[in-house]
Image 1: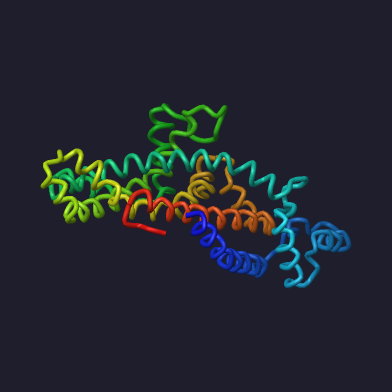
Image 2: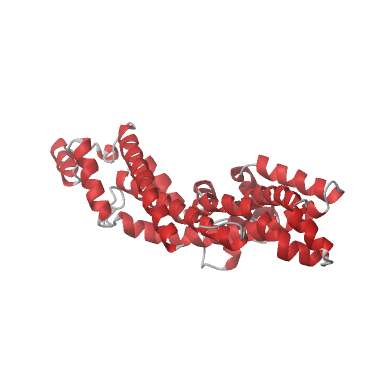
Length: 306
């Protein structure tokens, strides 16, 4: 399995290179630059700033320099956040995003799998129809609509929870952002679980387990649940990476100082190195999580061999 994991990681390196190259040249093709807000400076000072950050070099040379620094683990300095490197900014915002995203994904998996399994076991009943209707509603309503509604109801009208920010880090400040992140994922996971569970319950090995006289609980928990989770595990790979690297919309709405806010501010300010750092960090996380998903297949389905 270790050899397989190593081969998969090496095979992902060309994909990361293409991602880095596209992001590098596309962000520099956008109008504006990192020092446009400082037009009041004399032209000589601005030229010196561009030279200090090597922005006066040809793009190909800049790209080569960036790759060389990246190999050494150096994301470069931030153009807008003075006296901070991109690595320091990522390490500042990522723990916050990791906390929110991890809690949201854990909530989504627990609730989504439970609700989806219940709907599959009660197929075509009112429970099944109710779960699917609510799930479809959750998929249709984006989180930038649901988040203000939650703030209006639970923070402003009822006054039960804070409207935004992390405050002193108490759990109350995390409730609304976590729920806002988790609701769409609950909807997707419940639908995936329902469809997969229905298919697994009709398979031959489940019929054989029932024919042996095993209880329905044992059949579902020990035989049907694991293979039914395979589509969910596939979905969790890129979704988990997206959540733990910060939801741009949710972090902006709730004023959470996570990685998503740094990415937005970097894009608006043309902070090339900050945007590139977040993109590379996100790409590496996607590769790692997808690799973990592939390895988990062997734990859930004994038919999978490497």
